[in-house]
Length: 151
Image (tube, rainbow, N blue to C red; front, top):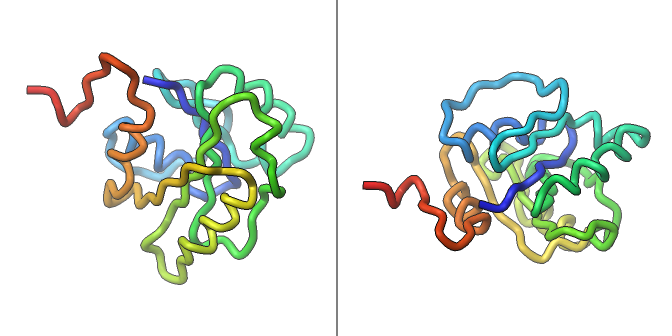
């Protein structure tokens, strides 16, 4: 599978999505540092929210094949500037999280991710596993066997 790095502000759902993609039971815990897994890199929100730490994300992006910009559907604003994806020499996808939360506006989040330059956008509710198979399929490479294909 392609390796993906998940970036987004604190509490946007990066760790919950990581757990869902790995097929783990969802439980909240605060990500304190960059976590490497087989095909997922989970980053703390403070890295994208703090200019100096943001430089570290640029370096960590080189460890991945795909950059996933997460934006909660409950956000009142976007951290991502217009056309930011052109600054990365990797595929960049948008991931709208918390799509079923009270007050969620997935379409607004989608527009903001499109404005930032994301052409491929996924809609996710990690707790309900909604959108998870689509992301896994996107990350699939030739010869990969997906969990639902095993006997």
